[in-house]
Image (cartoon, rainbow, N blue to C red; front, side):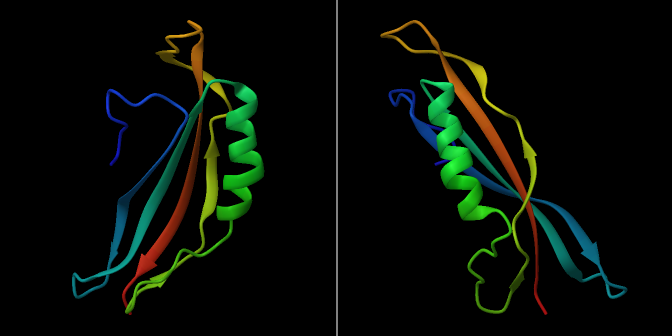
Length: 113
């Protein structure tokens, strides 16, 4: 699921993968693809989203290669953007405080030989 259900409340970690660029050979066959892994961490405090990102997600993902499906070559994940923690538009019902969000974006490439 790309977004939480309306009844679900944070904390959340939402991951989304999208392909945004393709390179063609002279035969008009795609030879390389560029993709983006976007991870959105949402919680009640700045400290909690920073701990998730700095201590868990970035060390686990940065410069690592995703599991390669048979017949494909997959490049390593490169952290290209880090939003830093910021206040979201969503407010906690019990405290009336805005939830904190941090977005990490990793680029990687993949191809079929």
